[in-house]
Length: 251
Image (tube, rainbow, N blue to C red; front, side, top):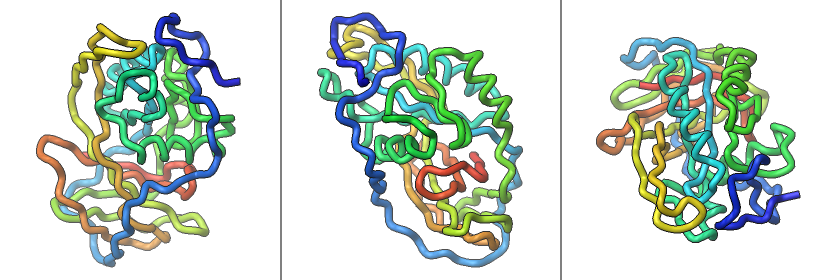
């Protein structure tokens, strides 16, 4: 049963779940760009990565320990750590400065595939396959060791396009996602809500999530949209409807 939020209550031991969670997966709304066949992009192939996604909120009093754990994970060269701020805790009095509906949509889409009964914070998802509460760094590191790196097609990120090499794709094709994120740590003063008066550090904050197109198993190239200054780009090749991540790369 979902816990009732309270601005004066101490951080709960259980993960925080929004009330009345709905189970219809909703799309992020990005338009699909045309696929262009061609050779690999100019960038060199990157090492295989384990992808850890944190779903968090500045309005949730139990999230700061998980934010700190994600900061620790950014020091590992074998891990692509990304922070997605959700919006359903904005009603507690503080609107998350990084939150976007498409990030909330991504978390909602994950939950049925991960066997969860609803979205919660802080949630860490490893390779799109394993779901963990983000409180315990040793627990997350065990999940990373268990999942291992994604070993799908080679992904290269060029100045103007993204290339995905040949490999085995799902029957319904895979989604190719672009995520642009802040490379460093951002300190956020929170003035209201459950974390009022605290300054919260956040790392690898995702600013844009966009679906570039579908990957069917053959070599393909996708136009890369212009990035905002100072942001870095990550590419995720993922089975549809919140399925496993098949390949990942970052700048």
